[in-house]
Image (tube, rainbow, N blue to C red; front, side):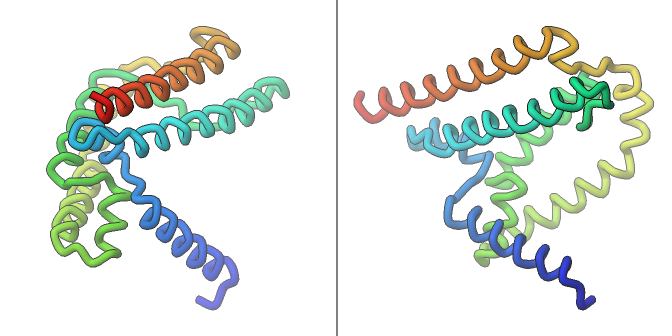
Length: 182
């Protein structure tokens, strides 16, 4: 186990955990804080992250498209299973008081209640892996794969997503300003 690669991964894990902890970054907080406190700073950070990811992934995928290579990435089917999973995930985040990254961060900070969330996060992941075959057979395999550049074209998909995210960013700023200046 004396591998330089292991040391790099260990250092990256510590650095990533440090950034998460110091930034208080949590997807749950990005939805919770605007309602509870009126602050949209984490919401806007998530939106900026999605914008950066959109630019990065679009560049990689479009480059492959131009070369005639298979488009990298996982283009998954969208269907009722997506809505069910999103709902279950949302309910779980509310009950746990955080998303996976927030839970792991708080476990590292020593919050004992988050250990319970982590245990059930692991149980739910194992249960989901166990039942994945059923979900695939009943729903996933029968659902269409949706890749927005195939539906709308590369330009509309790319700029449309950036414009939508930009509008959400502006809406979040407006909401915070309205809440604090009302």
